[in-house]
Image (tube, rainbow, N blue to C red):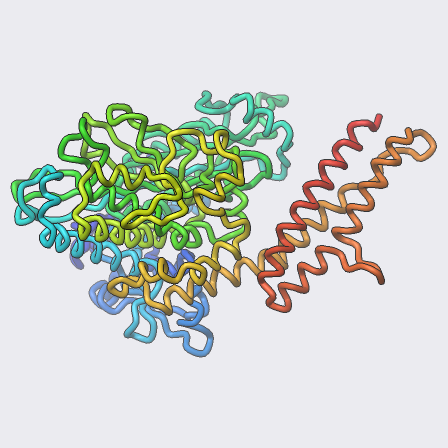
Length: 637
């Protein structure tokens, strides 16, 4: 059906009562309105209101919102079953998108159309007084960053010598820009990918940037066309490194599809970027499902194969009173320096305080599983500037890339490579902005210029610095996976959290860094406590109720394949080793408690340090078991 005349977006310029009524009246395909709140863990509500009810009191609903049950959102320590009053107040500052149900098509005044729901992002208010959840935190982070940055420039005017503007009084407004790059896997439902084939294909780079075919091509192209109808400004869609070539079956159909894709779209302000990220995921899943394909936004859907990231871009500029726009991160002379003092300060703040950004970006076991060496996922807190100021860096092994082109200074920005498709972009951006502001404040108060700051960022681990930590290196122009050992990386860049619990525990391990989030009450102590509680509960429940049973199933699959009457002594020897390892992992006896039982008991006893250690040990043992079992299987004929 032709979708050209359907409603896809109501922009902020149309968020006026009579205009909203007129738009909805002209588009009967939109049957519902949903107020969408984002809780502390990034879950979104979906409260459907019939358009007829909404239009009867648009003004009242925009002003007073609607109530929801606090137990339906994750706001631990804030809203629970005994104190559950939460109100959703529409956000008038962002785009409102229409979500169409392609499975429900009906006749409207313009022919057959899918039924649509106007999704209105909303702030969550607890008990009528306290704004809570991810949107409020990001809004306050943006406001604080903009206000404090202008104040810092005025207080330390020396920085104007290194910026493309003459006076702080010339600034009309600060412009923050953000965007995400979405990676995801698509596959044929009910078919299991062969891990060895996936790994081999990845090593041979058989998929990266290759031409898509069959239903994957059709779904990808339809998705890109649809995203443009919504106004996202698609920049690119392509294959990523993961995946295998699909198999063609009788009739020209394809089976055993398992491919990794990436979609990129235009940058926006931080709040709109976070909203866009969520809406794009909905649209991707819906379109690919129409072509009979499952989509997973897991960070690491298959062990031993590249995971999926959501590289997150951060930029800052100013609009001057004469209407021109100038980057705050680019230096005055982009052929002489890499960054301005503000750019260096933002990057240094991001790196120094990353330990309290990481648990927000990667609070789950799935997320931690992606952050392993060898798959282009960052494992160390380090950046790259480039071998010289005229040669932009394309080092993909670092955590934070500096994206710059001396010919296009306005595009200067940072690419944070650690978030994954399920990361809560609202909070990732909020925490990143607060970390960056901390670094900018330190740099400007110290009166540092670009040359001094490049030296600081390039310091050896043992060197002291006015801001960065002794014992750490922060810059590398080489492949950190190949040119440093694991021991060296941990020593000079800091040890990478090995479990979700270790990552979440960083808020307590680095209290001085956690205080950066509390600046101007952007994050409150209860906000952080609520996020920690939600993340910890998620880790415990998933580990106890999903991961432990899955590990038991993996152990049970290591069954005997040889015929005792027709085998070699090597078959019996290898399978004996398999049984011994399997019993250590999963079988209790009167003399010994298995690792999986010990892990479950540690979780039930809330001994999370022991549970975290046992999770690592058990995973190591299971992987070793599967390696021995694979060797045993290869000899069976």
